Image 1 (tube, one colour):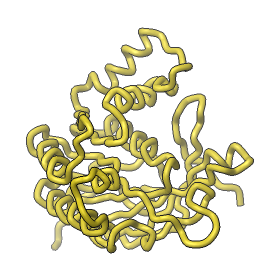
Image 2: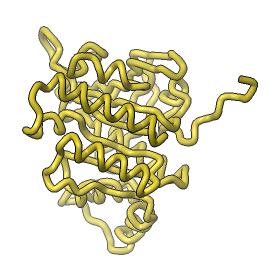
Image 3: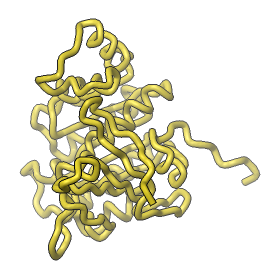
Length: 271
């Protein structure tokens, strides 16, 4: 008990999150949640890029809504500061090679090519293999809902409970940091998450296992229908649960997406 608490081995790319979460720790399950199409994957990719540059750890990537080529090009976009995964963005061969060398060429990124197979056991086994066989310190899983909608599960609530229990045990067993994504139930009343409705733990899918078994729950809010382009492209980040420090926040950071560079950067809110 006299030993000081070990500091985090990796941090988030944004100051507002680190002030509340104190970085990313081993054996921690972080859940990122938001409405559909509000930039959760881009949020994860920014964290991947930051870990890749600030640590020497291997990283496992399981982006189940896209193929490995899309994932690879999207990560390379961060290295070249241009959204080269889009068809109308031009890039030279030299820039492409440099972007590859700084991402996939590091031999520290492992992408899961799921071929449409997203069964519960398959996903759990792949996470374990990334942790133990490929020595990944960080694994990103995007997203849980696609696993339970794969057709080989019955009740969605029970399926989400089952996968969360298995993932929680796996995190403890292997000591990895697992950063996963969960979709939200639609809020009651007018205005959905796509129009800027706030997130809460009660809106997480399932019977409560996601909220209970996660160490950290991060909510993302953005009004994708706003008239103002700044508001339309600004994501407000909230900390819904924080088992490590207990510090939560309805708004700990604002991240503006720049469509020219394809990057999310932290901005100060006007008082």
